[in-house]
Amino acid sequence: MTNPLRELVAPIYLPSLIYSIGNGALQPVVVLAALDIGFSDAGASAVLGVAGVVGVLTAPLLGRVITRLGDRLSLIVASILALAALGIALSAMFVPGTAYATGAFMIGIALIAVSLNVWMLARQTYIADALPGEWRGRGLATLGGMLRLGVLVGPLVSTALIALWGLESIFVMNAVTVALALALIVRYLAPLPSREPVTRETPTAHSPDAHPGGVTRPDLRATAIAGLGVTTLMVLRSNKNVIIPLWGATLGLDNAIIALAFAVSALIDTAMFYPGGRLSDRRGRLWGLVPSLTVMSASIVLMVLWADPLGFFLGSALLGLGNGFGSGILMTIGADLSPSTKRANFLGTWQAISNSGMAAGPFVVSGMTAFIGISAALWATAGIGIFGALWFRALLPATYLRLGLGLNGMPLQQEFERPTETGSPRDT
Image (cartoon, rainbow, N blue to C red; front, side):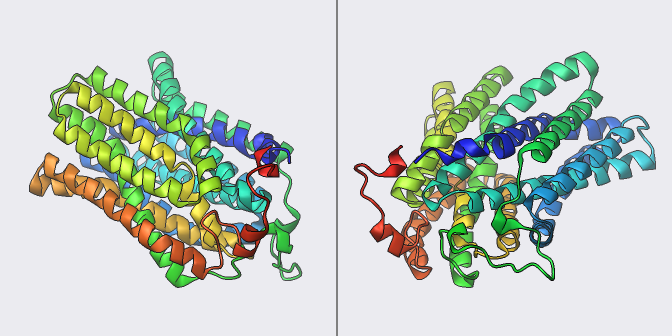
Protein backbone atom coordinates (compact mmCIF):
# COMPACT_ATOMS: atom_id res chain seq x y z
CA MET A 1 0.00 0.00 0.00
CA THR A 2 1.43 3.35 -1.04
CA ASN A 3 1.53 6.19 1.43
CA PRO A 4 -1.85 7.97 1.05
CA LEU A 5 -0.49 11.11 2.70
CA ARG A 6 1.37 11.92 -0.51
CA GLU A 7 -1.92 12.50 -2.30
CA LEU A 8 -2.78 15.20 0.24
CA VAL A 9 0.43 17.23 -0.10
CA ALA A 10 -0.75 19.66 -2.78
CA PRO A 11 -4.44 19.93 -1.82
CA ILE A 12 -4.11 19.98 2.00
CA TYR A 13 -0.65 20.00 3.56
CA LEU A 14 1.12 22.59 1.38
CA PRO A 15 -1.70 25.18 1.56
CA SER A 16 -1.96 24.48 5.29
CA LEU A 17 1.74 25.20 5.76
CA ILE A 18 1.56 28.42 3.74
CA TYR A 19 -1.57 29.58 5.55
CA SER A 20 -0.02 28.75 8.92
CA ILE A 21 3.18 30.67 8.19
CA GLY A 22 1.12 33.78 7.48
CA ASN A 23 -1.00 33.28 10.58
CA GLY A 24 2.10 32.50 12.67
CA ALA A 25 3.69 35.74 11.50
CA LEU A 26 0.57 37.69 12.46
CA GLN A 27 0.01 36.32 15.96
CA PRO A 28 3.00 38.00 17.70
CA VAL A 29 2.18 41.44 16.27
CA VAL A 30 -1.57 41.69 16.93
CA VAL A 31 -1.04 43.20 20.38
CA LEU A 32 1.71 45.51 19.08
CA ALA A 33 -0.52 46.70 16.24
CA ALA A 34 -3.40 47.27 18.66
CA LEU A 35 -1.15 49.44 20.85
CA ASP A 36 -0.04 51.48 17.83
CA ILE A 37 -3.67 52.02 16.83
CA GLY A 38 -4.48 53.45 20.25
CA PHE A 39 -5.68 50.59 22.43
CA SER A 40 -4.65 50.62 26.08
CA ASP A 41 -2.57 47.74 27.46
CA ALA A 42 -5.72 46.06 28.75
CA GLY A 43 -7.56 46.76 25.51
CA ALA A 44 -4.77 45.27 23.40
CA SER A 45 -4.90 42.10 25.47
CA ALA A 46 -8.68 42.09 25.13
CA VAL A 47 -8.34 41.91 21.34
CA LEU A 48 -6.74 38.48 21.66
CA GLY A 49 -9.31 37.51 24.26
CA VAL A 50 -12.14 38.44 21.91
CA ALA A 51 -10.55 36.37 19.14
CA GLY A 52 -10.41 33.39 21.51
CA VAL A 53 -14.05 33.78 22.53
CA VAL A 54 -15.09 34.09 18.88
CA GLY A 55 -13.23 30.85 18.17
CA VAL A 56 -15.15 29.03 20.90
CA LEU A 57 -18.59 30.42 20.10
CA THR A 58 -18.52 30.13 16.31
CA ALA A 59 -17.11 26.60 15.94
CA PRO A 60 -20.43 24.69 16.28
CA LEU A 61 -22.21 26.99 13.82
CA LEU A 62 -19.31 26.83 11.37
CA GLY A 63 -19.41 23.04 11.51
CA ARG A 64 -22.99 23.13 10.24
CA VAL A 65 -22.04 25.63 7.53
CA ILE A 66 -19.24 23.34 6.32
CA THR A 67 -21.70 20.43 6.19
CA ARG A 68 -23.92 22.52 3.92
CA LEU A 69 -21.22 23.95 1.67
CA GLY A 70 -18.73 21.09 1.57
CA ASP A 71 -15.05 21.22 2.54
CA ARG A 72 -13.67 22.77 -0.66
CA LEU A 73 -16.18 25.61 -0.99
CA SER A 74 -15.92 26.33 2.73
CA LEU A 75 -12.14 26.77 2.44
CA ILE A 76 -12.57 29.08 -0.53
CA VAL A 77 -15.15 31.24 1.25
CA ALA A 78 -13.05 31.32 4.43
CA SER A 79 -9.99 32.44 2.47
CA ILE A 80 -11.92 35.27 0.84
CA LEU A 81 -13.23 36.25 4.29
CA ALA A 82 -9.65 36.26 5.63
CA LEU A 83 -8.48 38.53 2.81
CA ALA A 84 -11.31 40.97 3.53
CA ALA A 85 -10.62 40.81 7.29
CA LEU A 86 -6.91 41.51 6.81
CA GLY A 87 -7.80 44.48 4.63
CA ILE A 88 -10.13 45.85 7.32
CA ALA A 89 -7.52 45.41 10.05
CA LEU A 90 -4.81 46.96 7.88
CA SER A 91 -6.95 49.99 7.08
CA ALA A 92 -7.27 50.68 10.81
CA MET A 93 -3.51 51.11 11.10
CA PHE A 94 -3.55 54.13 8.79
CA VAL A 95 -5.97 56.11 10.98
CA PRO A 96 -4.71 55.48 14.54
CA GLY A 97 -6.48 57.02 17.48
CA THR A 98 -9.90 57.12 15.78
CA ALA A 99 -13.10 55.30 16.65
CA TYR A 100 -12.98 53.69 13.21
CA ALA A 101 -9.51 52.31 13.87
CA THR A 102 -10.41 50.57 17.12
CA GLY A 103 -13.70 49.20 15.78
CA ALA A 104 -12.30 48.08 12.44
CA PHE A 105 -9.28 46.42 14.00
CA MET A 106 -11.42 44.48 16.47
CA ILE A 107 -13.79 43.36 13.71
CA GLY A 108 -10.90 42.38 11.43
CA ILE A 109 -9.19 40.23 14.07
CA ALA A 110 -12.52 38.57 14.99
CA LEU A 111 -13.20 37.71 11.33
CA ILE A 112 -9.67 36.30 10.99
CA ALA A 113 -10.48 34.01 13.92
CA VAL A 114 -13.65 32.86 12.13
CA SER A 115 -11.69 32.13 8.96
CA LEU A 116 -9.08 30.19 10.93
CA ASN A 117 -11.84 28.12 12.53
CA VAL A 118 -13.23 27.17 9.12
CA TRP A 119 -9.77 26.23 7.89
CA MET A 120 -9.23 24.01 10.91
CA LEU A 121 -12.59 22.27 10.68
CA ALA A 122 -12.75 21.79 6.91
CA ARG A 123 -9.23 20.35 6.67
CA GLN A 124 -9.81 18.03 9.61
CA THR A 125 -13.07 16.80 8.11
CA TYR A 126 -11.52 16.27 4.69
CA ILE A 127 -8.58 14.26 6.05
CA ALA A 128 -10.85 12.14 8.27
CA ASP A 129 -12.91 11.18 5.22
CA ALA A 130 -10.06 10.86 2.74
CA LEU A 131 -7.69 8.55 4.62
CA PRO A 132 -8.00 4.87 5.52
CA GLY A 133 -8.57 4.44 9.24
CA GLU A 134 -5.13 3.04 9.95
CA TRP A 135 -3.58 6.27 8.58
CA ARG A 136 -5.82 8.72 10.40
CA GLY A 137 -3.45 9.45 13.28
CA ARG A 138 -0.52 10.11 10.96
CA GLY A 139 -2.67 12.16 8.58
CA LEU A 140 -3.97 14.48 11.27
CA ALA A 141 -0.61 14.58 13.08
CA THR A 142 0.95 15.75 9.80
CA LEU A 143 -1.67 18.50 9.62
CA GLY A 144 -0.74 19.40 13.20
CA GLY A 145 2.90 19.42 12.13
CA MET A 146 2.16 21.92 9.36
CA LEU A 147 0.48 24.18 11.91
CA ARG A 148 3.44 23.88 14.29
CA LEU A 149 5.92 24.58 11.49
CA GLY A 150 3.97 27.68 10.55
CA VAL A 151 4.07 28.93 14.14
CA LEU A 152 7.83 28.25 14.18
CA VAL A 153 8.66 29.93 10.85
CA GLY A 154 6.06 32.73 10.90
CA PRO A 155 7.55 34.79 13.77
CA LEU A 156 10.98 34.63 12.12
CA VAL A 157 9.47 36.07 8.94
CA SER A 158 7.62 38.77 10.88
CA THR A 159 10.83 39.80 12.65
CA ALA A 160 12.54 40.44 9.33
CA LEU A 161 9.55 42.21 7.78
CA ILE A 162 9.04 44.52 10.77
CA ALA A 163 12.67 45.58 10.60
CA LEU A 164 12.32 46.40 6.91
CA TRP A 165 8.81 47.79 6.49
CA GLY A 166 7.01 47.98 9.83
CA LEU A 167 4.00 46.27 11.35
CA GLU A 168 1.76 46.96 8.37
CA SER A 169 3.85 44.65 6.20
CA ILE A 170 2.83 41.64 8.30
CA PHE A 171 -0.81 42.07 7.33
CA VAL A 172 0.16 42.35 3.68
CA MET A 173 2.37 39.26 3.97
CA ASN A 174 -0.46 37.33 5.64
CA ALA A 175 -2.79 38.29 2.79
CA VAL A 176 -0.25 36.99 0.27
CA THR A 177 -0.01 33.64 2.07
CA VAL A 178 -3.81 33.35 2.21
CA ALA A 179 -4.01 34.08 -1.53
CA LEU A 180 -1.37 31.43 -2.29
CA ALA A 181 -3.14 28.87 -0.11
CA LEU A 182 -6.44 29.71 -1.81
CA ALA A 183 -4.87 29.21 -5.26
CA LEU A 184 -3.67 25.73 -4.24
CA ILE A 185 -7.11 24.85 -2.88
CA VAL A 186 -8.82 25.96 -6.09
CA ARG A 187 -6.30 24.11 -8.25
CA TYR A 188 -5.79 20.83 -6.39
CA LEU A 189 -8.53 20.15 -3.84
CA ALA A 190 -11.25 17.97 -5.33
CA PRO A 191 -14.42 17.28 -3.33
CA LEU A 192 -14.62 13.71 -2.09
CA PRO A 193 -17.60 11.73 -3.44
CA SER A 194 -18.88 11.37 0.12
CA ARG A 195 -18.41 15.07 0.89
CA GLU A 196 -20.63 16.73 -1.70
CA PRO A 197 -22.42 19.82 -0.39
CA VAL A 198 -25.65 18.91 1.38
CA THR A 199 -28.84 20.07 -0.33
CA ARG A 200 -32.45 19.03 -0.12
CA GLU A 201 -31.84 16.79 -3.12
CA THR A 202 -28.51 15.40 -1.94
CA PRO A 203 -28.54 12.53 0.58
CA THR A 204 -26.09 12.83 3.45
CA ALA A 205 -25.23 9.13 3.62
CA HIS A 206 -21.63 8.18 2.94
CA SER A 207 -20.20 5.15 1.36
CA PRO A 208 -19.65 2.63 4.18
CA ASP A 209 -15.92 2.76 3.49
CA ALA A 210 -15.74 6.53 3.85
CA HIS A 211 -15.69 6.41 7.63
CA PRO A 212 -13.70 3.47 8.96
CA GLY A 213 -14.51 4.44 12.53
CA GLY A 214 -18.02 3.11 12.21
CA VAL A 215 -19.68 5.58 14.61
CA THR A 216 -23.22 6.14 13.38
CA ARG A 217 -24.17 9.08 15.60
CA PRO A 218 -22.58 11.25 18.30
CA ASP A 219 -22.42 9.65 21.74
CA LEU A 220 -22.90 12.22 24.50
CA ARG A 221 -21.25 10.17 27.24
CA ALA A 222 -18.20 9.35 25.12
CA THR A 223 -17.88 12.97 24.04
CA ALA A 224 -18.10 14.20 27.65
CA ILE A 225 -15.46 11.73 28.89
CA ALA A 226 -13.04 12.48 26.06
CA GLY A 227 -13.83 16.20 26.19
CA LEU A 228 -12.92 16.55 29.86
CA GLY A 229 -9.59 14.84 29.25
CA VAL A 230 -8.95 16.98 26.20
CA THR A 231 -9.53 20.12 28.24
CA THR A 232 -6.66 19.18 30.58
CA LEU A 233 -4.34 18.71 27.60
CA MET A 234 -5.35 22.04 26.09
CA VAL A 235 -4.76 23.80 29.41
CA LEU A 236 -1.21 22.42 29.45
CA ARG A 237 -0.63 23.29 25.80
CA SER A 238 -1.76 26.88 26.15
CA ASN A 239 0.14 27.27 29.42
CA LYS A 240 3.32 26.02 27.76
CA ASN A 241 3.56 29.35 25.95
CA VAL A 242 3.09 31.19 29.25
CA ILE A 243 5.21 29.02 31.54
CA ILE A 244 8.48 29.30 29.60
CA PRO A 245 8.72 33.13 29.50
CA LEU A 246 7.11 33.58 32.92
CA TRP A 247 9.33 31.12 34.77
CA GLY A 248 12.40 32.31 32.89
CA ALA A 249 11.70 35.88 33.98
CA THR A 250 11.12 34.68 37.56
CA LEU A 251 14.58 33.08 37.53
CA GLY A 252 16.04 36.37 36.28
CA LEU A 253 17.26 34.89 33.00
CA ASP A 254 18.22 37.05 30.05
CA ASN A 255 15.55 37.51 27.38
CA ALA A 256 17.84 35.93 24.81
CA ILE A 257 18.10 32.74 26.90
CA ILE A 258 14.32 32.62 27.31
CA ALA A 259 13.79 33.12 23.57
CA LEU A 260 16.34 30.40 22.76
CA ALA A 261 14.66 27.95 25.14
CA PHE A 262 11.30 28.75 23.55
CA ALA A 263 12.69 28.18 20.06
CA VAL A 264 14.31 24.83 21.01
CA SER A 265 11.05 23.70 22.61
CA ALA A 266 9.09 24.61 19.47
CA LEU A 267 11.65 22.89 17.22
CA ILE A 268 11.48 19.61 19.17
CA ASP A 269 7.69 19.86 19.24
CA THR A 270 7.56 20.28 15.44
CA ALA A 271 10.00 17.42 14.78
CA MET A 272 7.82 14.98 16.72
CA PHE A 273 4.65 15.30 14.63
CA TYR A 274 5.05 12.22 12.41
CA PRO A 275 6.48 9.85 15.07
CA GLY A 276 3.66 10.90 17.38
CA GLY A 277 1.01 10.19 14.76
CA ARG A 278 2.59 6.87 13.80
CA LEU A 279 2.65 5.78 17.44
CA SER A 280 -1.03 6.72 17.79
CA ASP A 281 -1.95 4.64 14.74
CA ARG A 282 0.18 1.63 15.66
CA ARG A 283 -0.24 1.46 19.43
CA GLY A 284 -3.45 3.37 20.01
CA ARG A 285 -4.51 6.85 21.07
CA LEU A 286 -3.30 6.42 24.65
CA TRP A 287 0.26 6.34 23.32
CA GLY A 288 -0.21 9.91 22.14
CA LEU A 289 -2.24 11.18 25.08
CA VAL A 290 -0.61 9.69 28.18
CA PRO A 291 3.05 10.41 27.24
CA SER A 292 2.10 13.94 26.16
CA LEU A 293 0.37 14.78 29.44
CA THR A 294 2.91 12.96 31.61
CA VAL A 295 6.05 14.34 29.97
CA MET A 296 4.75 17.92 29.96
CA SER A 297 3.76 17.65 33.62
CA ALA A 298 7.14 16.14 34.52
CA SER A 299 8.96 18.91 32.64
CA ILE A 300 7.14 21.57 34.67
CA VAL A 301 8.10 19.80 37.90
CA LEU A 302 11.70 19.60 36.66
CA MET A 303 11.83 23.34 36.03
CA VAL A 304 10.46 24.13 39.49
CA LEU A 305 12.81 21.74 41.31
CA TRP A 306 15.88 22.49 39.18
CA ALA A 307 15.61 26.27 39.38
CA ASP A 308 18.66 27.33 37.40
CA PRO A 309 19.35 28.00 33.69
CA LEU A 310 20.20 24.36 32.86
CA GLY A 311 17.06 23.02 34.55
CA PHE A 312 15.00 25.70 32.82
CA PHE A 313 16.47 24.84 29.44
CA LEU A 314 16.00 21.07 29.85
CA GLY A 315 12.46 21.54 31.17
CA SER A 316 11.57 23.72 28.20
CA ALA A 317 12.93 21.11 25.78
CA LEU A 318 10.91 18.38 27.49
CA LEU A 319 7.79 20.52 27.23
CA GLY A 320 8.26 20.52 23.47
CA LEU A 321 8.90 16.78 23.43
CA GLY A 322 5.76 16.07 25.45
CA ASN A 323 3.60 18.29 23.29
CA GLY A 324 5.04 16.65 20.18
CA PHE A 325 3.84 13.22 21.34
CA GLY A 326 0.30 14.55 21.08
CA SER A 327 0.61 16.18 17.66
CA GLY A 328 -2.79 15.96 15.99
CA ILE A 329 -4.19 13.76 18.76
CA LEU A 330 -7.13 16.03 19.56
CA MET A 331 -8.17 16.14 15.91
CA THR A 332 -7.69 12.38 15.70
CA ILE A 333 -9.92 11.67 18.70
CA GLY A 334 -12.52 14.06 17.30
CA ALA A 335 -12.46 12.17 14.00
CA ASP A 336 -12.74 8.83 15.84
CA LEU A 337 -15.82 10.02 17.75
CA SER A 338 -17.47 11.77 14.81
CA PRO A 339 -20.40 10.17 12.97
CA SER A 340 -20.20 9.12 9.35
CA THR A 341 -22.75 11.72 8.25
CA LYS A 342 -22.60 15.46 8.93
CA ARG A 343 -19.15 14.96 10.42
CA ALA A 344 -18.34 18.67 10.41
CA ASN A 345 -21.33 19.36 12.69
CA PHE A 346 -19.80 17.20 15.41
CA LEU A 347 -16.26 18.44 14.80
CA GLY A 348 -17.46 22.02 15.25
CA THR A 349 -18.67 21.15 18.74
CA TRP A 350 -15.46 19.21 19.39
CA GLN A 351 -13.37 22.21 18.34
CA ALA A 352 -15.37 24.44 20.68
CA ILE A 353 -14.46 22.08 23.54
CA SER A 354 -10.78 22.19 22.56
CA ASN A 355 -10.80 25.97 22.14
CA SER A 356 -12.35 26.35 25.59
CA GLY A 357 -9.36 24.64 27.18
CA MET A 358 -6.96 26.71 25.11
CA ALA A 359 -8.69 29.96 26.06
CA ALA A 360 -8.89 29.05 29.75
CA GLY A 361 -5.27 27.95 30.16
CA PRO A 362 -3.54 31.34 30.53
CA PHE A 363 -6.25 32.53 32.93
CA VAL A 364 -5.62 29.44 35.07
CA VAL A 365 -1.94 30.33 35.41
CA SER A 366 -2.51 34.05 35.92
CA GLY A 367 -5.24 33.49 38.50
CA MET A 368 -3.26 30.93 40.49
CA THR A 369 -0.12 33.06 40.27
CA ALA A 370 -1.97 36.02 41.73
CA PHE A 371 -3.36 34.00 44.64
CA ILE A 372 -0.76 31.34 45.43
CA GLY A 373 2.43 32.40 43.63
CA ILE A 374 4.16 31.28 40.46
CA SER A 375 5.79 28.13 41.88
CA ALA A 376 2.52 26.85 43.30
CA ALA A 377 0.75 27.71 40.05
CA LEU A 378 3.24 25.58 38.12
CA TRP A 379 2.76 22.69 40.56
CA ALA A 380 -1.01 22.96 40.11
CA THR A 381 -0.63 23.01 36.31
CA ALA A 382 1.47 19.84 36.47
CA GLY A 383 -1.23 18.30 38.65
CA ILE A 384 -3.85 19.08 36.00
CA GLY A 385 -1.72 17.20 33.46
CA ILE A 386 -1.30 14.14 35.69
CA PHE A 387 -5.04 14.12 36.33
CA GLY A 388 -5.63 14.16 32.57
CA ALA A 389 -3.23 11.26 31.99
CA LEU A 390 -4.91 9.16 34.70
CA TRP A 391 -8.37 10.11 33.41
CA PHE A 392 -7.58 8.97 29.87
CA ARG A 393 -5.80 5.80 31.03
CA ALA A 394 -8.74 4.79 33.20
CA LEU A 395 -11.68 5.75 30.96
CA LEU A 396 -10.66 5.99 27.30
CA PRO A 397 -10.41 2.20 26.63
CA ALA A 398 -13.94 1.61 27.92
CA THR A 399 -15.18 4.68 26.05
CA TYR A 400 -13.83 3.42 22.73
CA LEU A 401 -15.13 -0.07 23.49
CA ARG A 402 -18.58 1.45 24.08
CA LEU A 403 -18.41 2.80 20.52
CA GLY A 404 -17.18 -0.51 19.09
CA LEU A 405 -13.70 0.90 18.43
CA GLY A 406 -10.20 -0.22 19.22
CA LEU A 407 -7.84 2.37 20.67
CA ASN A 408 -6.44 2.95 17.19
CA GLY A 409 -9.88 4.19 16.10
CA MET A 410 -10.64 1.15 13.96
CA PRO A 411 -13.83 -0.90 14.35
CA LEU A 412 -13.15 -3.89 16.58
CA GLN A 413 -14.20 -6.36 13.89
CA GLN A 414 -11.67 -4.86 11.46
CA GLU A 415 -9.10 -4.77 14.27
CA PHE A 416 -9.42 -8.52 14.69
CA GLU A 417 -9.44 -9.21 10.95
CA ARG A 418 -6.59 -6.96 9.84
CA PRO A 419 -3.16 -8.46 8.94
CA THR A 420 -0.49 -8.94 11.54
CA GLU A 421 2.39 -6.49 11.80
CA THR A 422 4.65 -8.85 9.85
CA GLY A 423 4.07 -8.23 6.21
CA SER A 424 1.24 -5.81 6.89
CA PRO A 425 0.58 -3.43 3.98
CA ARG A 426 0.52 -0.65 6.54
CA ASP A 427 4.28 -1.01 6.82
CA THR A 428 4.84 -0.05 3.24
